Image (cartoon, rainbow, N blue to C red; front, side):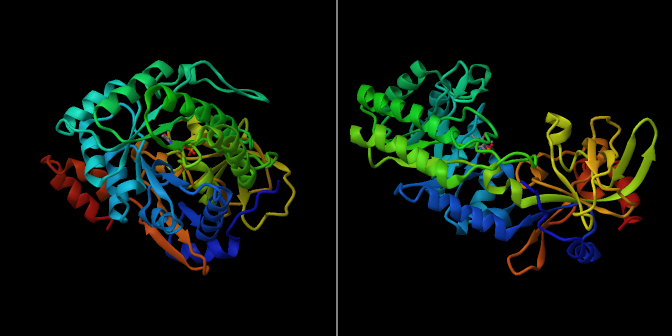
Length: 430
Ligand SMILES: *Cc1c(COP(=O)(O)O)cnc(C)c1O
């Protein structure tokens, strides 16, 4: 599949007059159309809700767009809860799928009326104590089947090696405990494979969880109200991959539902999802400018972004497609490593990439940074976070987060005597 940038060179030349590179830019139209396709794919299920995984793109303006499309929010930290609350999401619009959870996060989730999804059996007593000896009416438990997760095309992932969720025995035990504590509404959750580019993942997972749900209800008498398929639906990062068809995925889950749940009198169970990558990934990009070229044993292009702005290539060796804006149709007759400025040799957005000839000043559009892109940023080498921009449906551009400044970076030294000196140095740049 051809990968096409959602902004043109001309648009970027306009944008940079106001907002310098590097920046992440999001495509509102793409986000909305995709969110509607997800809703449509699961409209057969009355209680369906997508809880957007806030960690993927924790920006209140983005979250608000999704909220208007009917999404809830999957949080796993205090600040993600605060952000959700700030945009008016509380109650059953919040799913709290955390792990290794500090007590204050259970307390705050409960205060917002959000749904706690227990990662472990030991967290149940821990949370109960934090909540002053009571348990909310509705809770969920996260399942880990262990072993390897296989589908028709082989092994997909290795739950037996993952820190998340509880064993089957613990899950049954947890449901009994929770029932004794007065819980009325139950959910089950599992996340068994990441970035799956196949329409089979959700239906396969759903089949396993539906069987489990039937067994759980029979043996524990717990009233299961929802089954949460969590995240893991992937996107085609490389041009040779075919993207998932969400309509087909929804139909595949429906088939399992009608085969397993409906005949067992569980035809009213709601399906929840917690997608991050699929909801936002393709609708964000990192735009950066080529500022240096270097010819040693290889050909290097140095850009004004670096791994702090997009960590995935450095951390996982991930492929992110690059379009050189204005050269969409030029032959790919050069081979480059595209690098940032960190003193860290893994700071490369692309290695041995075939690209058109890059000239200094060219704008590079690094695709598919809408999820787990900006949000994985960090400050190594004292590099600062970029701005985030929104390309709105009407074609205008809004800054939805300003770029970080040295003042932000040094703010946590404000208790030290040296801060006065830093303050006067910063003033020279302001
Ligand atoms: C990260 C995460 C998600 C989202 O995963 P994607 O791969 O972005 O869809 C959903 N649920 C939980 C609990 C997560 O940790």
